[in-house]
Image 1 (cartoon, rainbow, N blue to C red):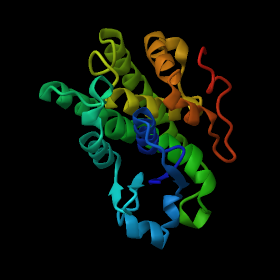
Image 2: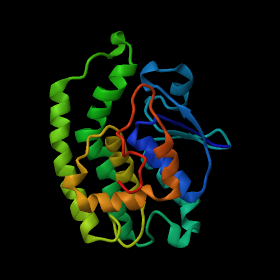
Image 3: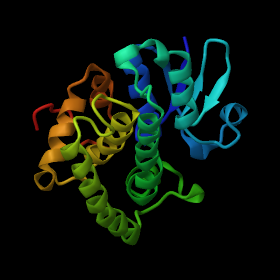
Image 4: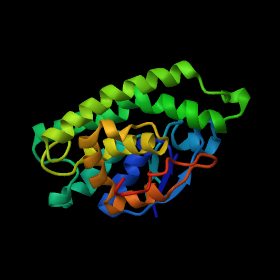
Length: 230
């Protein structure tokens, strides 16, 4: 069986887990603490980043874009109306643009700094960068949430799904990011009813169940995290 090296609070890892589940491909999950810089993991991905997907032939694919494109080219084209990338080149480009937005821009502005300050610093030894959260970093990231939620509200309010008429990589990338923030209780859902409705649809999908059942050591999620009707 393929193996996915991941971290439960990694947006990119959650994205690939959702993709694999939507396509019905099981994989063994190995939680990786990237700051440990394990020699075996670096042999798979010298960049030391997540996720890493190792197929049945022991070939390593590194990074969410590479993995998702590989899965589409090898399996997605056979899924017809369940394909997570569109057949039309322009529509496919829009899906890729939005997927990049949530996996890169939102990650840089919001998700990565919040996870680093609130999760990783609690797990990393002091000598390797652990310690108390930086209040300035937290404040900046929380301010950035509002702008990303406004954009997400516009997308989810003007289209059936974020990139068009059907579920795509764009929805899974956005939902992966939102699920991390929701776990941490960083989203005020009373200010985002349209996004909440879209997210409820994603949370109700079978692919989301493993994420909602998962817990991070030493960090309890917000009370409504696993509720489908919250």
